[in-house]
Image (cartoon, rainbow, N blue to C red; front, side):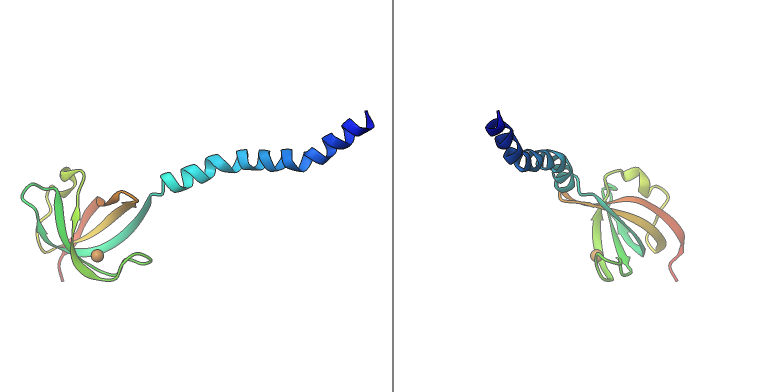
Length: 113
Ligand SMILES: [Cu+2]
């Protein structure tokens, strides 16, 4: 009996370590598989693809993500470009995942200066 109790006590750290792994595993998995970030940006529409599935924007610096440049962005919902035209000054939201990036929201804030 005393021997069994000592064995059980010796096993406790291993049991706690195992429980700790169990507790951490799910958060690790969701942390790597579902890493979605969004960024708010300002820019000027240069052109809109005829199919409405991409928009080229001359954007200002996007803090923590990319510096100012002119580039094309995919759009997953072409409807968000309705009513927008080249030279519109826009505020837009960029969604970035490990599978790509796209404009997830965009609104006109005035004509280009
Ligand atoms: Cu860019």
